[in-house]
Image (cartoon, rainbow, N blue to C red; front, side, top):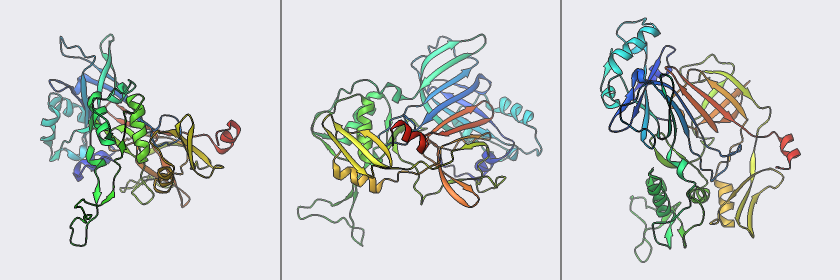
Length: 406
């Protein structure tokens, strides 16, 4: 979940009366205010229906704009999408109507960049542009009085064959950095850095030849150039780490997994009308499956002649490919990776929260019994309001048995 430290802005996001304005920042120019119409962003964490380590998922966006700068060719341009929230709680005149609020936002904010907006406040409320994503324009179509931008993040281009620009043998960190460089995407390599053993005085514990002892690392050696597309190679490396791959809201390629049971989850309580602590999360509609989906059997195809398995074969299967996998590593993944048991669902958050990410977890309270919901797929719609459609698929046990997929 995207973190905002300012309590006033968080209160504005949670308010009943609020509206949003968007900024499309192209670097050398921007489109904002009245010139940005409807924004629809589709993203997720799964390629199929079930959660699977090694999934590499790109996000798409469709954006309506009223005007674009003259003599600018939009196709191929990369831009960042920001939104900012305006709420009556931040205005000096209490009881401001939604129409007046929109008028204020147009009059004072439509010509400002996101940097200028972040320094501005109305009635003491600072305006913080919240990043929604970084996209590339694939197609620009002109309508009667508007333009439609069809966009995607940089993983859209990852289906090309991986041709290394580095030498081998090498390691997985170098491969990820090479692919990200070829895709024109950022990557946070600190996520993959090693942790070292220390003594009680916070000093590194060294081996006899002076090397630090590793506590844990996701980095592993790759003896020769991996075969496949860039998407497939990212998938193999992520599978070894027990993660899926997405591009986050800053345009950075990250490897994530879902919140574990011990971590904070948003609460959907059907017996609650919504509280300040986030209970109910403003879900206006939800459709839940009857039974949990639980995955506890892993099947990894290493090559045409080698397949490793781990778990209980009568349970639901997570199946994937990874030429780097070993039986020992697969067993460790089954023990260490929290493979969620969840209820399939479709939910609508009419008063959407722009801080939500696809790896966030939910708890559903059904008469005191909490079960897990996952945001496997989400569609964000911003048109002055902000709405999120959330879905998590998966066949029932009966359907899986019938289809031979159990």
